[in-house]
Image (cartoon, rainbow, N blue to C red; front, side):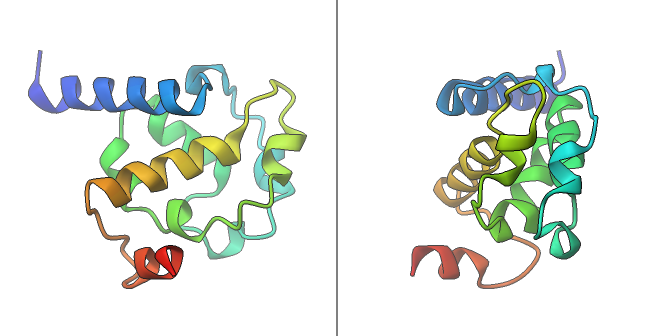
Length: 115
């Protein structure tokens, strides 16, 4: 198995373990995005962010502005028909990115969250 694929799979498993959510349960209905007030500023709206994880594109998710700009308003989680706590998944990815010292494409966003 390719090292990158193995690393992606282990990171997704870690995201699911920490958040308590199964990213594979998202069926891309878009309700989270349609109610997200911040999605206009994100590089990936919430449903596409979940899709990145489903496709194993964890590097993209870790570096995304979505993970670092999310307001944590929980609207996406409240609207999910599958009961997925999308905001918690996004926050978990942000926390892992911070632990791995991965900067967002937008500079100083990590500093914003630390402050």
